[in-house]
Structure formats: C-alpha cells, structure tokens
Image (tube, rainbow, N blue to C red; front, side):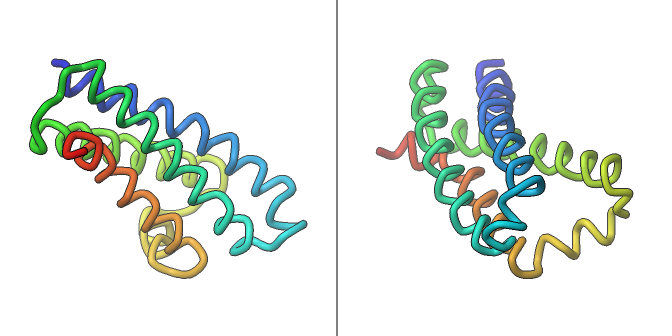
Length: 128
C-alpha cells in the first residue's frame, strides 16, 4: 500500500507543477520563446522537482529496494501518461494515435525523455 500511495503522491506533485508550466508554455512561453526553447527550460525544472519529490517520498514511505522504487515510478508514469492523454483528448480533441505519435517528435520528444527520467527517479533516490 505504501508503494501505491507514494506513486500517487509522486505523480500528483510533479503533475501539478507540470500542469502549471504547461499552461504557461501554451499561454505565453511558446509564443515568446518558441515551443522548443520553452521545453528546454521546462524539462530541467521538472527533473529537479522529480528528484526532490522522489527523495522525499522514498524516505517518507520507507521504500528501500530498487524494485519498490521502480514500481512507485511505474505507477506515477502510468498516471501521468493517462492524465496527459485525457487532457489532450478533452482540451484539444487529439486522438490517441496522434497524441502517441507526437510523443516521439521534436520538440515533444524532450518532454518524453523527461518523463522517462521522472519514472526512473525513485530508483535513483533509493540507490543514493
């Protein structure tokens, strides 16, 4: 139960920050700096937030093994991808196929790589 709770909290914390930064990117950042430039700023901020959140949650929930931390990251990643897909479908009418293929094209590939790091961060926090 601790792993599930840690994964949900991890997702919620990082998703909340990502939602704010994504809203800024869509409303202002992309027009002012360009989509790719803003994503290059956004991804390191998200990775840093992931590190601090993962370290805090791994310690708080007593996750001591790479497997437990990996499961926490997998739960958080599944929730993140589900939330992003839902938002893409609801807010912009994007299809599942269009959303998925967009994950692998620049500049969104940078965000996808950041999401992979996000999923792995709890394991890095345990092994430290």
